[in-house]
Image (tube, rainbow, N blue to C red; front, side):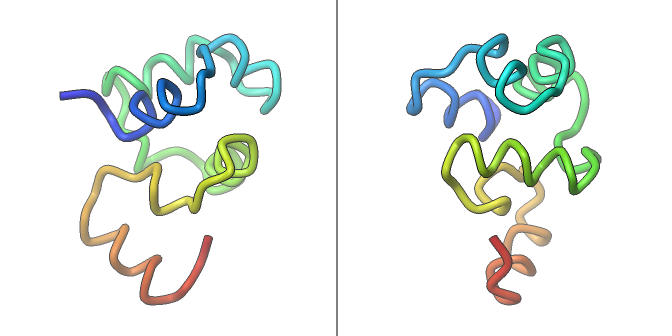
Length: 78
């Protein structure tokens, strides 16, 4: 099963390289989160914010951990 990030990248038509260029995050780092080699839930909030801005989605949409996603939704944090 694809990660939430990988699914969003497909939906929005972005490559790892394009997202990296727009966020300043190394495309190999993005790829490691997208293919679940590194848990995206451990990414610094600053990087999550950059990705969510470029992909026009709430931060909670990027996370894999359901409990964290629900907490963010309850707090109405994007």
